[in-house]
Image 1 (cartoon, helix red, strand yellow):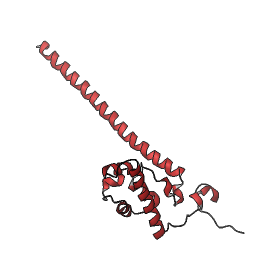
Image 2 (image 1 turned 60 degrees about the vertical axis):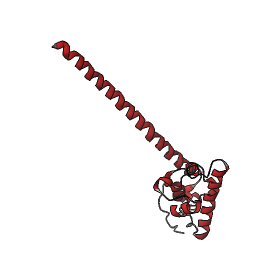
Image 3 (image 1 turned 135 degrees about the vertical axis):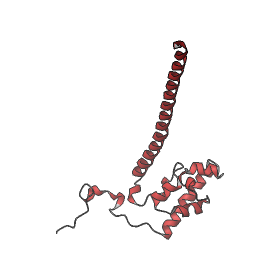
Image 4 (image 1 turned 120 degrees about the horizontal axis):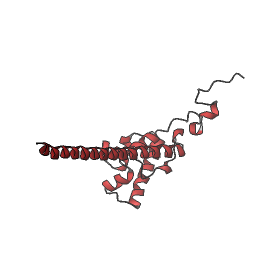
Length: 161
């Protein structure tokens, strides 16, 4: 009777080990997946900082293939509906987060020169929108650098001269 129980105990231990390894693999996969998303976010924030997007009027020449309609809409303060209409892509939630490179491939704009033609359409759409609806003036001058106004982001106080 003891001999008949030994194989079942070993097999249940084996199942526990296999389940543990499987769960660790799933955990590592989740870490890699979400880590890649965080890297993309870091890259977008760093790019926006390097090109002074916080100044409320970024140059259209910095539109890149890795950017999405949602990113450009937010960075340039332009409605997504307008951008989708101007570039000729259906407005969907999934299209909003796809890079221009992937949109170009998905909607057969092609790659290479055709991708750059799509980026040119985006830049022209931004310029046209800005002509029709000029962006608000920059609140704190070029780049919104609060250090020039007295330090750590405090509201500027009137001088008593």
